[in-house]
Structure formats: C-alpha cells, structure tokens
Amino acid sequence: MVGLNILCYTRLYYLERTYFLKDFNLRPNAAAFVAVAALILLAFWGGYSYGKTQIPSEFLIEGVTNQRVGQPEDVDFSLFWDAWRVIQEEYVGSDNLDHEAMLYGAIEGMVKAIGDPYTTFFPPEEEKLFREDISGSFEGIGAEIGLRDDILTIIAPLEGSPAQKAGLRAGDRVVAIDGKSTQDMNLNEAVRLIRGEQGTSVVLSVVRDGEAEEITIVRDTIQVPVASWENRDGVAYVRLFSFSARSPEEFARIMQEVERAGLDRIVLDLRNNPGGFLEASQRIVGWFVSPGEVVVIEDFGEGSQEEDQEYRAVGSGVFKDAKIVVLINEGSASASEIAAGALRDINGTLLIGEKSFGKGSVQQLENLRKGALKVTVARWLTPKGTSISEEGLIPDVVVEMDEGELPEGEDPQLQRALEVVGGL
Image (cartoon, rainbow, N blue to C red; front, side, top):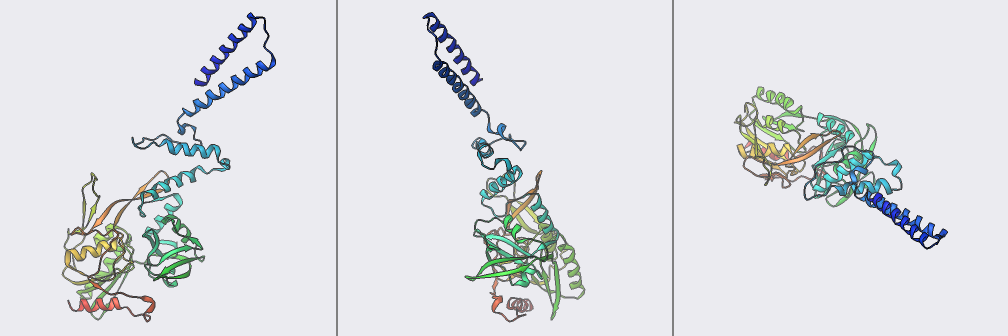
C-alpha cells in the first residue's frame, strides 16, 4: 500500500504538470518524459522497498515451518529471522543451503551459549548413538569423556575396552582428534569424531602430567561391562564398572553370591566408573543402608519454583551392618559419586583413593520433534547437603597412584583398602 500510494501521487503530479504545459502551448520534450518515467520507477521501487522492510522477517523465510513463536519481552527474536533472511538472500551458495542443518546448528549454538557442558542437543543421528551408549552396546573406543575447565577430558576408559588397552587413562586431556584441535569443541562433535566403525582407528593427542602423547586406538564393538567380584582372603572385592540399566540386576546376582559365601567385609571399587542411571544408584546403595534412607538430594537452585527432591534407597539393606570401604578416583563420576557420597554420609563409610571427577549435575533427556535435548535441570547434593558438582568427593584416605610407574598388577589403592577394611 505504501508503494501504491506514492505511485498514485506521482501519476497525479505528472497529469497536472502536462495540463499546465498545454495551457501555455508548450510540448514536453523526450528528456522530460525520460525524467518523469525515472521518477515514477524510483518512487515505485522506494515504496516497494519500504513496504518490504515492514514485513516481519519470519514471513520471508523459506524452507522451514512454524517460524512464529512466543517471545520474551526482553528478547526480540526477529533478529534470528533477520540473520536467516540475509543468508537466504545474500549468501553466495544460497541455492544449496541445508535448512535442517542450519536449524540444528542454531540450536547447538543456543545450547553452547548456556555454558553448561552437560546440556546437549542431539540431532537425530546423534540421538541414536546416545541411546546406544546407555543401552550398553556400541562401536567406538570405550571411554567416557567430559569437559573439565573447558578442556576435553577422559573421565574413564571402560574396563577391557580398546581405550584402556591402548593406554588411555582417566584425567588425560585430549587436545586433538585425528589432528583436529579440540579447542572450543563441544562434546557432541568430539563423540562424532571419536566414534566409528569396528576395525577403524582414531588418533588421540593427549596431555598427561604436562607431557604430550599420541595414542592410536582401534575401534571395536563395546559391550559395557557391569560388575565382577572375587574373594580376597575373606574380603569381598566387588568392582562396579557402570550404573547402566543392567547394573542393578547384575549387582544383585553378585551380592547374593557374596552373602552365600558368608563374607561381611567388602571393598566396593568405583574407580573409573563414569556413572549412569540414578535409579541404579538407589538400588545399589539399597544393599548397604536401611530401606528408605535418603541417597541423594536433587537441588533445583535458587529462584526455581520446584522444591528439592529426595531420592531414597530401594532394597532390603542386607549388608547394612557389613564393614565396607569404597575406592574412588578421578574417573569416578555422576552415579558413582552419588553412591559413594551416600554411603559416607549415611554409614560413615571410608572413601579411599583420589578425588572424584565432580560430575554432580542432573540431566533430563527431552524428546523433540527431531532429535533430543539432554538438559541440566538440577545439581546433586549428598544426604548431608554437600555439593558433588565440580568439586568432587575428597577421599578420607588419600592414596595417589601413577599407573605408568607401577609394576604390572600392582595396585596400592586396592592394597590400602584391603588393609583398612580388614582392621574395621
């Protein structure tokens, strides 16, 4: 309408001008016609351009649907569509734009801006890989990774995995993957580069104790181990490798064997256990505490309308009177820290080894129309209110261990744990 009004006004002006010339018996020359025609075109283009600027950017977007969304009063979301429109109209390769990839990238950028390494967007293909991970079987190197001080860090190599066999250790800082720097790399991209088909290899450039090293790992099908145990001179040495969906059932089988063996002294080894499901930790802790004891508190933070949530032990507490110590190290994370913190707060259980990783936040997996969003919704507190996040758990008995300098098969942390539990 703006362009049309200007054009009508211009035409009226031209007719009046011609009539004025006729009154004086003057004839417009060719230059006058050209000038007037140019004026008409200029006015039309000006009106069209101005009118176009008044159209919300989302209506000019092609290749996507559901552009209009509710917007907070302090955020003008049209800026996003303005940028999208400029790319669509001006980018040299606009004919080949992948709108879906642009959308996924925009969401990933939004998530990254939050500053929480554990809030992650999974496009459809990555969502599939993530679900394979938590199901207990996938192809890759078999290591849990995270971000510590914004640096890609190995939380723990899984027991018997290609990563462990190649010499990767908890705490290794990964500075490059197949020669590509990991600086500013998010966890999703790191997983994409490290994962791969069985039989292929990946080279990780790691920094350990200030020394740089390149480790070549041949990928394989990874079966996430659950647990094992053995009798160490009257002490049940129980290793729990993960808190997967299968862990409670397998752990129950082991503890029933320990009970039949008549053992009441236990070393629970949670070293290099990257965690997993909260429900698994509730059921596993339930073997060692009275039913209904608070295992962990979910703290939603100041300003949240949700009240703190308490999660309690599930089980019969068969071994609540047993003598127990727990082994931890910097590869103990998430559900491992929940279990270790609960046993210390409830039973006074001694923690032996090195400080845990400090992954004490709560993630919730939300299914989207395409893909999924793993979002941090709260932080874990031990039953006595100690935050696990970032700080980790400090052991009661510190035993440092440099695996590279130890003779094969020697384990001073385990040896100390067996000594301590034997004296309880």
